[in-house]
Length: 239
Image (cartoon, rainbow, N blue to C red):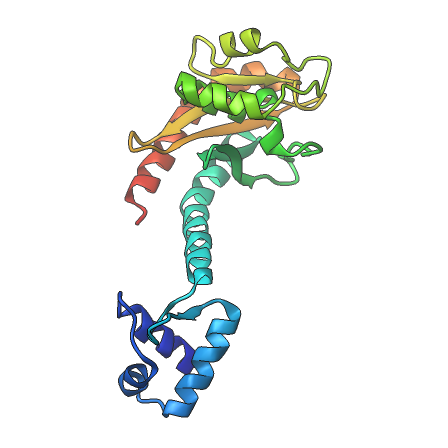
């Protein structure tokens, strides 16, 4: 494994690729071993041999990089979510607008702060969730139209808003918060606040609770905003 990783580092150090003989010299590996490792890496998608004989990194390296970025994101965000959960006694959520979709990135819950049961895929229910509405409120008109054209406003509960104009009018309230009032699941309400860095990142922070506790959560909106600002600063500083 050490030799394979050393070989991948050598391949990565040559933007235009390098032949196996050169890679063998640089890693101090026997040529036969180098060929064997390169073939194995190629089979798994971590290296590719071009038509002129040089070796470059394979497509799966980029996949790993994307997953690593998500793990870094979770590491940066989770402490803030956990702090908000403990402070308000409610499950805390963080979502992002990624590649045209609204995705739930992480949830901090616990025995005394259970998360909402995601009985319908989150990506297909943004119109019925506080996070989804909060993100939609931050998109421009074109992005909103594109999203809504691809995601029907499905009726999930008797409280779900399925009329587009009504949905757009109520994306965010006068306090800047977005709400889910038992629109996704009966017995659960949510409040969300925007998290954006001005450089293209569009996200939202939310908490869920029993409907009777929603006014209390709304009165603590300053705590949601403070946590949102903390997450925003953390992500801005995350390489």
